[in-house]
Length: 150
Image 1 (spheres, rainbow, N blue to C red):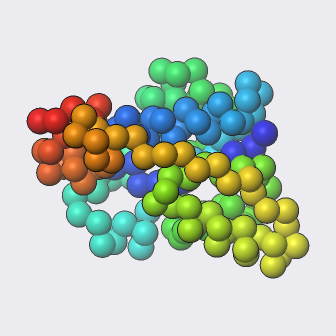
Image 2 (image 1 turned 90 degrees about the vertical axis):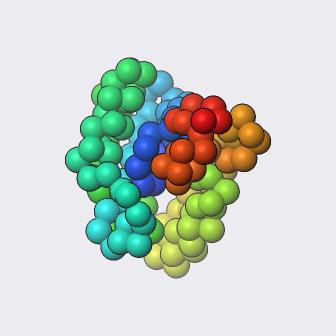
């Protein structure tokens, strides 16, 4: 199965890893996962975002550590659709935050006579304080990458 995911991946945290792991589990042993990393105008209004090179390096390190690297491709994306309109994928894995984008992608795919993607929504991964883990919370030193309260 061919699966796509996207995100900023500013600080690769437990929630991102859960999303990535779900994508590879969905793709299956011989499947393929495209990881779109937001760039350009997509991150224009975000604060303290690491360079694209640094974010991709972190993703590559994680993929290598999990044995996923050979079944993956990481590329920058410059809009909310990424490559999901241009290429054929079977599924997209999203968080509650990106569900509406996946629905828009499917609407556009259908209007272009392409098959809709299977949308698999994961739950937020919660920190010890029962609030979602996010790069913003990590940058604010509320929690660490594992969701532990600082």
